[in-house]
Length: 341
Image (cartoon, rainbow, N blue to C red; front, side, top):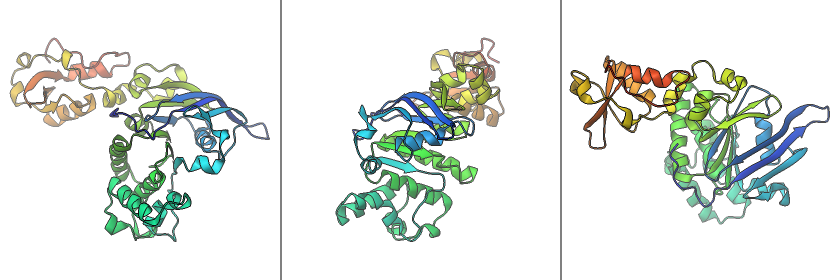
């Protein structure tokens, strides 16, 4: 994800030994410690029952922890009322939860209205957010949730969560209720949106590919909310911390790693080392290795020509080099193949 400077309205969040044990002795979360920098998106992932959604609900105090502290910008969240806290936090859930009897504009304006914003300011904010999530205000403002597609409703859910400019956004499997094609589109829209607003986000998902695609970092949890590893997608795929993480991310982690590994232009083979490279498939140097592999396969060659900002070739990336980068113990990206084949 593009790491542009975080918005002044993003906040750090610290979970300091946070846990939840229910009255019957069930330990949903033991003692989780986790730091999220302002403007970062951390993904919580793990098997069912590992406490992911419980963690989100403790952050916005829908559930009170039985131990530990949760700090937002260094301030314990219990120092303010739960209602005041929730107005600083956006919350997006799997099935959106829009109010069916209210227009889209009224849905988005819910928290600003409760906070006492003037009507004109609310309307301007609604229109701003509709534009931000790619929906034309004049066309959608006065519609009702039943008149929208699942993907459109999910966008409205995100817009509503952002309405009062929260310091933190909590997202509980926000894209899982739509079909795979719409889901990819929503992920693309969300990445674009995060580049624009740079909020601190804690996102829960069961989908490892989604976690890799969206997260600045990924926290892998096991039963009881035990933190097995917290790392960037590239580090997680390259160096699983233990057997649990390795099993969870799967045997194809090398292939997955291609989607988060950029082309290393310093390690390309010379264009002159491959006959006929000038007519081969081309990719810009800014792509990930997975995109380069796709271009290579589409072009029916065993190499792809990498181009610079000016569109001129700067080197050749071979299928062997990509395979080496995907190998289980690979630590470097796209080493050149000395044979050129």
